[in-house]
Length: 148
Length: 425
Image (cartoon, rainbow over all chains, first blue to last red; front, side, top):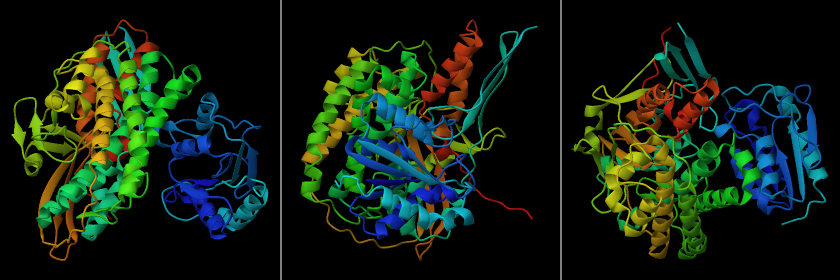
């Protein structure tokens, strides 16, 4: 399962859903979903054996740079609350899934460093320029994912 | 002279962004302000000039937690303008999807946002470490609520299947029947939830609220009813703006609503107090078992009342699933005019009023969300709470204030909209 997370009305935060859409158009063997609500990821953490999250990043490197994390092996730094509904964020969600014993077999995160998260549609130029590279990398990296 | 300042810079476990500031001098409150700094969203201005059939999809975007409520209030108001009654099958299916929203919204708030306050945990994440099975039950309830919204509305959030006149596509009998087993599980989980919150220690506080909620001739209210008040007053939705007025205060991007200049309360406490007799004998009995009276004036008891309503919504959804009949298509004939409608969002009354042209274009829109209506009450609760807990140190007092704000399950993003957008150049 590939989940693209983000709000397409907040600039680069729309990266996740846009990447998910591009990957979906390549007709992969895995289901692909767009999620605007991070808490929705919990349902898939429970059900998916292999899960790949796509999200825009901040603080990972130069704008537009591509980063990947194996979330079952690496720990994300804590994020201050208040950036999303009810203060949910990815590290908090992963903590919840760990406490509930609902972790998938594999859990990967791919993203690009974002530049602008203000209200408005469209990705910034450096992020848009690397969108296809991100999608190609994701498709390559999840080849061994177990199909549902 | 002794001065104290209590500050909560960023309210956690509420939807949207706000800040609380309290100043005390010689144990007297000199300033108490709930600052709402979430950006204003201008939804009413966005609606003007749009075609009537776009309105439900646009208003659902106001909130990711209660989009059903926004679609329902807008659809009812527009149907009232067109003189359209879509019939009992549509009515039942709308009540079913509203139950779904109550289940997912109340489930999320009780388990992950509010219960940690009563049990001494800083967050739902910490609660999940200490009591994973409890949190799993809460998430399962939320998931079942989402499932209902998905099946009836086409999506879990910002549904695409609701329209003026009914539904774009009627769910099949098999799709609705598939909800029966999850809902039977939900009824069991919701009973356990009520028993669980019944064990919580409730901080003492009594407030003399003016409750306002819908009241229906035979049902616990969701989509329909007369506007009713604990002062014995009653109005049709069209009279709402004659009595309830929104005004701007400098500290808030959310308007403050008042009843002839005074605060009033909407939401679970008000609905319960004004509709206790509509809950049915079994749920009334369970409410009594957890110490609830027919009218509760302690805002901290709202978590128990949400659990009562969660159980009611599960039982009601199961009844509606068992009696499902697919609604027939309904023809919509556009007529010019203006009308208002009110429905009961999980957080309380949601008022919509529209004026539509002969061509079906929106000429005027007004939306009054529940959190705007409760902001005055929240500030009054905080004042009363602080005055009766002055002996507490700053940190426990701050935590108690945050817990009191979460009594309202406030949706700040819903509330931050301005009636008019005026640009001066």
